[in-house]
Length: 392
Image (cartoon, rainbow, N blue to C red; front, side, top):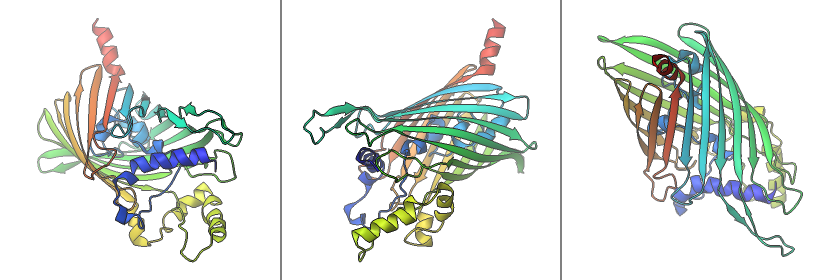
């Protein structure tokens, strides 16, 4: 693996996780490693305000990231959303994530959708090469584009499938051994929506599943070691409770697990040569599909550590008259797997044509670089735009 990718990937992973870890925990700190870490960043403000839940919430324009199978249940015929996140502003000033998503519902039972993601790591000062040449300023970035198709199989159940192209350029041009990497992935998703009676109220129940980024591994040149992309399993449930004609309340929960093998640690009595041979055999030579099955039982700490690899989120949303929303949530990750623990708050305002949402992170761990992260979303409802033109 080339040194450039190693340095920048580990730098990004460290920013997101290790900063919040105490030094006396370092021996048991064992996060799941993978490439293109930006693929796991929640892009939209609504979900961000609810603790990063979204696989089973009622459908919206940004369901492409959370669960494309939700789109056939949308009320509007089509929509487009622009999302922006200034990333890790506690540490740097020039990292950000931009995300564009949209969908079009075909008839009453299916939909097509797509998204474009661009993650900039800002400017990085690369040291000069060994021949004494001057230092360079590089601008590493990662991007992806995907399309999806979703179909209702009944009035309460739908399936979705997506394909994605991922590109990561974290290299500089000192040697010919460095090159950008690319990969392909696919998503399989399902969504169930029905109404249940709770006393005198008819509540909307949602259940969701999304397995994302099932696909190839990614190689950056320099050697024959390819990295896993973040194949991910997300399960969730949501319950929308109408209070009266103008007020409703939603509670949601998600559980999330990376389907990526745990990076093997070197044993105390193991030589460097033996460790590298075992690393190649048990990690780098494993295919992405085999890695999915291996990820359920390869944690060094056994079942206890496997359970620690499951992140969970809780979120709540209050909506008044479909115009104004208040949100709150909590996200939990084991301190041995990254320690991303934070509360979130958010709000949204909707008009006939567009809606504006914001989400804000309040970290519970000191020195957490995610603290005070803001996300913004601007969404356009094409049905509302059509009605506006018709009135004119």
